[in-house]
Image (tube, rainbow, N blue to C red; front, top):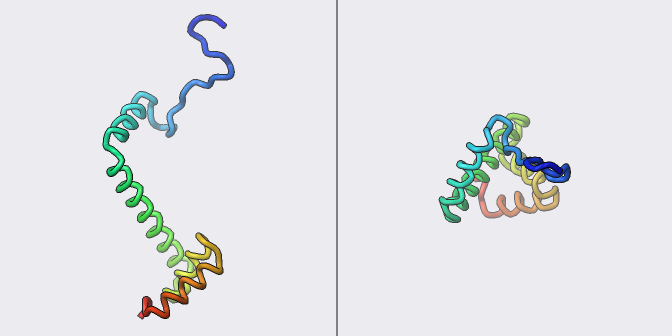
Length: 99
């Protein structure tokens, strides 16, 4: 192996996103790490909430005539399985969640 070349078994680093230069990505990642764990936790919760809302909207568009209970069951079944979805909707109904 000549000086300045990498062994074939070691791949050169690549950006996580194909449209972002590696040096820009490294700066961005460094800034994310500096923000600390509380900021990262808040961001994760925000993104999770965004994903849930997007999934709820997708179910609403795919099943426009479904009741709220039916839409909840569909979404929960996709995420956790039919048995859990049915039980969650049943318990919500008992607590007046859908009134």
